[in-house]
Image 1: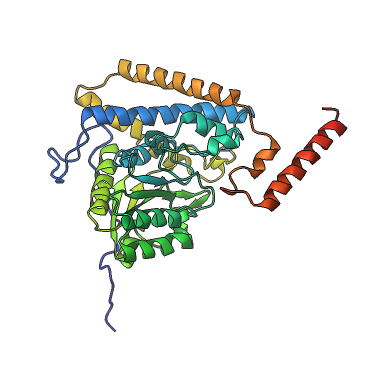
Image 2: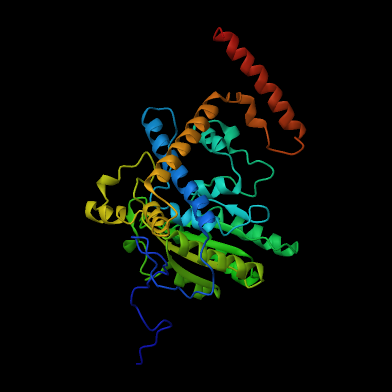
Length: 371
């Protein structure tokens, strides 16, 4: 019997890359048909990368002191998130996040103060400002992906040229919601970017025992959509492939599945202990591929950056993070009656009655407690 294969080769897929770790270009004159990010844009992107790194460090320290909730750091994945977000137009494009995309949300207009409030347990932090095109953070794996397809399809039906991007990890890519969403988006040619951050881990499950696929981006073939694998620690490469995907979506050519190869150099979240399962040698190797250092090296070679500029940027980001944390802590948390807020646009009579009963019970409880 002949050996038939849909894909003739099982060799590893080399991710698209433009920058080496030392800041040199992978090709002397990369002919990709698209211009590289200009220096001003790169510096703006770098600021979001450093701001997020500083925030992660501060928030982790505060969590250890009991002053911040459990959250997931972006450490090591900043280029993937920032590079993709800079391909978007916040005025017309939508983001459906998971929980590890802080810099993309900030660039889209979500206030850092709100993010801090959210993880300090203040539900008002989860309120999305009216002018920010994003969905709330999603803790349940892949649950936001069908919603992103709905947004993209809706934009298409409205005649808009906006696109939707949704972020998820390699662990979430095994959820049924992903496959249903890829299928529907492909059929409807919905303008959706499926941005898969392959950071090597689904909490403590390594990628190699989660799937037999040589490339998660190749799954796109089965749904008749475009797929690409990119070096997720290369800001320029990530931005370029995402910019291309956005252009295809705006032109009516349908969705794209982007697999960004990166590595989670921190814990899954601040309740996790990665030393129990992460190989120290492999982690050390990936730390040498730090995305912030890579893009800084590129700017230095171009005469656009130095250590003094890096120090100034980090100090500015530290001041901004400290201010956001203090502002978030100063915000009073709502009372228990807030449970009834924002459930219905026009509350039904039964909810009005329940709210009244709750208020009476709360007052009685307070009197009994001597408050």
